[in-house]
Length: 167
Image (cartoon, rainbow, N blue to C red; front, side, top):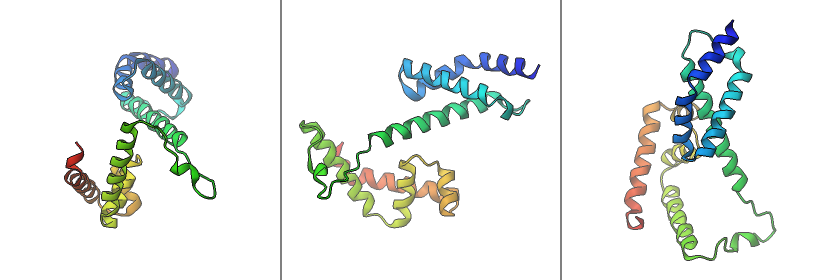
C-alpha cells in the first residue's frame, strides 16, 4: 500500500517538477531528461522517503542535486589540463575570434580582482563560485553563516566596482 501512495504522489507532482526543471535548464528537452532522471532516482530510493513528510520538497531536493551534479560534471569534462612539459597548449588560441579574446581578457581581469582580495574574502567567494552552498562554506571554514554571506556579497560588490568598465 505504501508503494501505491508513493507512486500517486509522484504522478501528482510531475507538472510542478517539470516547470522547476525548465526553470533550471531553460531547455525543454533537458528539462524532460531532468524530470525523468529525478523520477527514476525517487523510485530507486523510495525506501529512504519518510511517509507523512514533505514529499514535494523531497522531490525538489533530488532534482536540484541532480542538476548541480550534472552541471559540475559538464564543467569538469570541459576543463582542459595541459600536461605537456612546456605548457604549449595553454598558449594556443582556443578560438580565433575577437570575442573569445575579449572574454579571456575579462576573465583574466576578474581573476586579478578576486586574487587581490584578502584570503578571508577570496576563499568563500571561490568556493561559492565552485558550487558550494553558503551553509557548506560556513561549515567547512568554521564561520557563522552571516559572515560567509556578507563576505561573498562584499566580493561581488568589489568585482562590480573594479570591473564597471567591462559592462
